[in-house]
Image 1 (cartoon, rainbow, N blue to C red):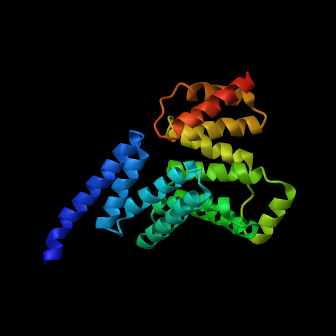
Image 2: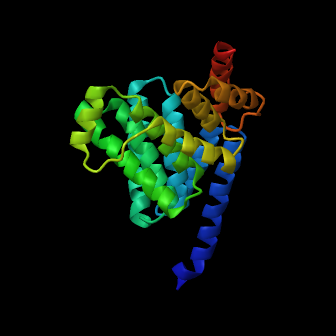
Image 3: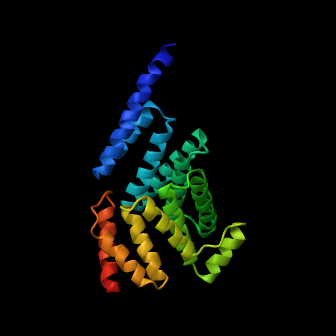
Length: 242
């Protein structure tokens, strides 16, 4: 009875901590944001929202870490959190997206054999996320990146991938662009997506399409801690296309 009476207060505190973490993310204070998510998990270890946010943030912070061991620790923890989030709710679009993102980070230190399997799993979880929520912009972006990166593989890696992962759909630059364009409609200020879209157009020989995307991108205000870096890349790409 006491636990039942206390639960609403605990739930409210966890919700407040996750909201604070998201506010800090928007203020581009990622180190402070992840501490809020960790605090929420200490109070409620099975809270789905806190697990997903902490997993996603570890992927972002880990990617910026220059120490290889530190990167691996962050990505391993992100994977563990995503796996636990799926145990809480396997039909959560956010949890499936978090797993796809964590797996994409794990490819960095994986063996060739492991990478082949991970590529298939990334597609599976990102597709599951978009199947649950067709407007999940981050999962759509992840699928777009998957198509872009896999379609750029050489003949031998593609053949190995087909042998390792059965029933895997054909990756194509066109499908990457379809996903990125959909995300642009859903979230016009998603800077990483705009950069990926411009890169896809350039790879497809459509600089005329890439230039206006980049011209808009460089004028947007940064929203995440990674956005200034994406904007620098966009400026360099834009200069090369003029």
